[in-house]
Length: 167
Image 1 (cartoon, rainbow, N blue to C red):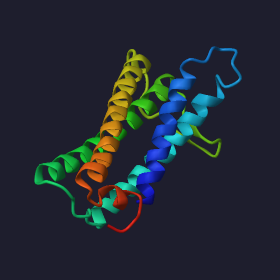
Image 2 (cartoon, helix red, strand yellow; image 1 turned 180 degrees about the vertical axis):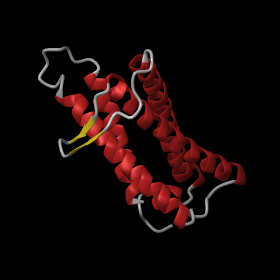
Image 3 (cartoon, one colour; image 1 turned 90 degrees about the vertical axis):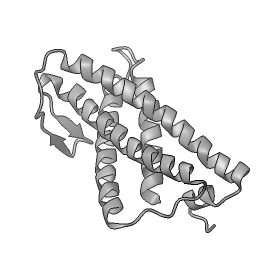
Image 4 (cartoon, rainbow, N blue to C red; image 1 turned 90 degrees about the horizontal axis):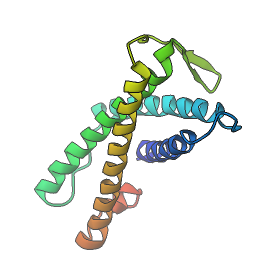
């Protein structure tokens, strides 16, 4: 559950930072710092996702609440979350490394550019990154609305379980 919320806060923060930084002009004091922070937090999210996927492999998912079709949809939405996040991480990496530049992580270490030099790599990866991120945000909003629906309409324990309270 803590992984869920750390990732949720991190991903929403990255989305907000991403929207902010693409509007900065060259002379803004955050023009260099915002992308560096965005990339570093993105690497942390990638590491958390790896931990979460390992966790998911060794720990069974809690039994879903709701109707059978809701449980099936929830299962596929979680898979879609993982796929979108992986795609966002890869496309973000390809944006940064398009010119052969490594990815600095809080100035502590660097991830080398392993895939670079493809024609229009930065532009194509940027478009993919934007589309995947916007799709993820729509899915996050639907996920939140579904949790609220479970709480207020169905009056089941879904939301309480998500925030760590007993059913």
